[in-house]
Length: 303
Image 1: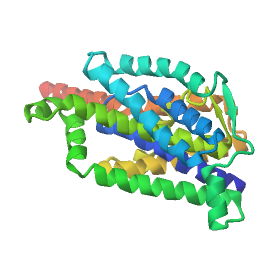
Image 2: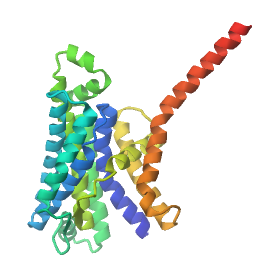
Image 3: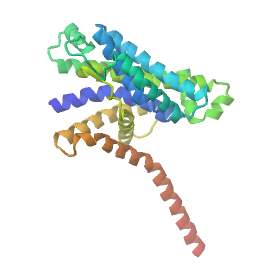
Image 4: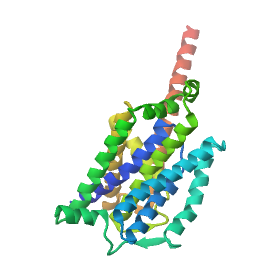
């Protein structure tokens, strides 16, 4: 039961990360490496504000912090002309120092004994189980965010972002400001990623400067696992698939650790292998199809 509860709680929190990764990676079609910095940025801001006695504002400000980080990456990409990968690396590198400043130059910040949104929700609703409160609140936040994101991408600005990811040249020809569209999309993406970090800080009771290491691979693994179950059938289904993949991924991790299938320190390596294999599948399929056509051509020529 503890295994199931823990996996669900973390799955719902990390699902917000998967939603952010899905926006940049699948919809906008940009390999944004800001995620590792913005996730920790949200975590650090949430923890620092919570220590100051304002857990709710910690969550709100974590979203804002992530959005600012994403916007900076977008500006570096569009206004300065830096390659998207390098732009993300620059922002991520700069955020490391900023995160340390936010955490008062400490690599770890404890929230033990501090009120969080989870303890507040527990007290307000009269829930006796802290695990139950964490699960219910995490689900509520995820459902609200998921619905808002799905609705947003059916509105005009959301459709512009989707069109930009599909065909940037066509969007420019339609007199749509592609640069501002990208900046907003990256801000939205990293705002969701930072929200995941902010919730995680209050969930686990501490913030660590290294929490974001490898988090991009975790998000990609969640997105890819979700697509295995639900496929690629539109943006709305894609968001739901990302959430599903996050939960499944957490169960896979929990089971692997609980049954000693592989050591805990190899989790990120396993995630990287999963993502690498999944990303290589389209190229492998294309190559096989090309070889099949070539063989059929040679066979027909021989006849």
